[in-house]
Amino acid sequence: MTATDPREERLPKWAREELGRLRMRLREAQASRDEARLERGPVDATDTLIDPYATEGPITLPKGERIRFVLGPPLPGRVDRNYLDVSVREQTYRDGSTDRWVEVMGGDTLAAYPSSSNVLKLRVTDHF
Image 1 (tube, one colour):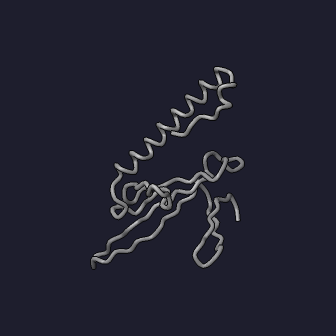
Image 2: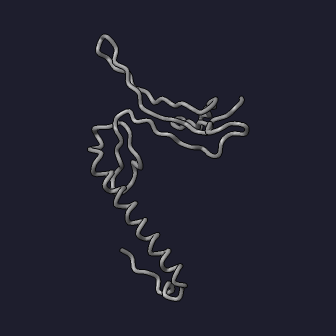
């Protein structure tokens, strides 16, 4: 735990109490995050990771889990359509071979913009 700032002693009581509550919520959120890292299982057992570059290690989600990215407020005249749902999909064929791909579904029309040889930007749009 980090030491409190000595200037906090000069704050009003309500502000010191609020800082205490916020610190407690932060500790609870960190504990919940750490518990999720431990409970979800090893990285090699899934295809979906949250925060893969974290120094503490990623949080794993069940294989094939769908993740929603909210890109901003709803598009004009629309309700909850400014999002992308992303997941890894797999299909096994009769001959035993498998195919895997990333499936992206948008709340409305998707526009893809190549950015470089290994980067593709996706945007939800209501027109082209």
